[in-house]
Length: 508
Ligand code: FAD
Ligand code: DLZ
Ligand code: SF4
Image (cartoon, rainbow, N blue to C red; front, top):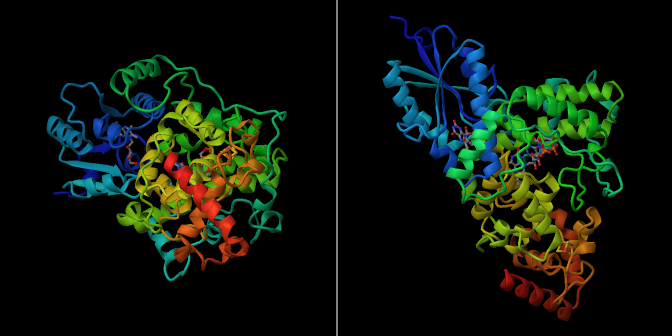
């Protein structure tokens, strides 16, 4: 008897973030013999309390993808959330399909999250195939990381440039430098033309999903409508084209900028499509590279953008699989405070925080600097428990999956891994936010005031953070200047900072 599972009728399991026609599991199967299983289950909808827009995006994209599979000749068993026999777990649905269809073998592309990988590893007869939508396999990343004292994205990124040959001129990087980040720190001006990501009108399928989400997840965080995300590959490709045409040329210059009432600036807002499988990392990067060679976008924009995808995105995934299962429990700075309630309500007088959180609530989106230097920075300075911070980020963004969210939160933003992912904590006083945004002008707090009632809360919290964690951070060469400044302050000034910080902390 032939034991190759893929020569017998097989159940091909496709998860909600594997919506690619050429995923490993689909490539391994055959449309005339096998059945595809897709299942909407409560376990996935509720392992964190996902933002309503994220739920609608994933469910509608799944439903559209099932139709595309059928059009391509696949037999699809699609289980809806309101199917009365739904077991509401993915392994439960695999077992039910196997029993109903009398198929003993099943295959799946490896899931992006550790908890599901564990569940699938324990399921007999389910073959798990490597997810080759990523550029670096787990083994490649482990080999690269092995024996290195520090893991730094920049060196990994150069390997990925060589591997993909993106923006390479022979063996050298295009323009003679690997990284043009120093040119990418301009504050934006509100009179500049700001494109908006492409709006897609909800079709009938999406309308039905919106009604379902409102009915079943009414108490989840977030504003459901207007809902404008694309939910098909075709729509995501149109969003990519729109980004390249309208925003890419200025992406680099204003990558770190923040403006009130401009939630997207020149960002691509493509991560939700990429992470769900509607777009592939390499096709996005090739498109951006082409825009550079055709003279449409400058090198600092194209290189900066490509680095985010083949550098940061691949690097954080590598870290996740290298360090799980313990990674999400890491708490190097022993931060223990609960997450303040205003992370869910936006009800705070801090204009920068209120803008980032309100936008997160309305769009299931905030760009990188808002995530890192506003909401992340505040949580870091205030000493919020990293697990609570992690759960918030995993819930509130349309692009959030643990493999990418956790390293960004636990590692990059909260320094809870003690510096594995970043060489220093991203801690900053109000001065940084003032330099990169227009929020402070409209804030109840005074960014120039260092201590006391009306002072910007980031100012005393910054020093309190450094003092509180001095035993762990003082030796960090990148913080030497900050500690020297503290040491030069007179004792009364130091005490004023610490007292002010305590008052801020008591208020939250
Ligand atoms: P752009 O600014 O247009 O960047 C282009 C693309 O590069 C993104 O679409 C994304 O795929 C990739 N990218 C950029 N930075 C990173 C990064 N640090 N890590 C991985 N990919 C990156 N990204 C997620 O995809 N999911 C998350 O859950 C997530 N959580 C984050 C939490 C924190 C605290 C921080 C600091 C960053 C997080 N990021 C996350 C990374 C980044 O902020 C988002 O990818 C980006 O804001 C998505 O918006 P965009 O598509 O407009 O990105
Ligand atoms: C995010 C998500 C949601 C909300 N719902 C489903 C679902 O009902 N069925 C499904 O197969 N996948 C869903 N997903 C995506 C999964 O959570 C994702 O595959 C895992 O988190 C692994 O990355
Ligand atoms: Fe944020 Fe402080 Fe500026 Fe207010 S003054 S917007 S709290 S940085």
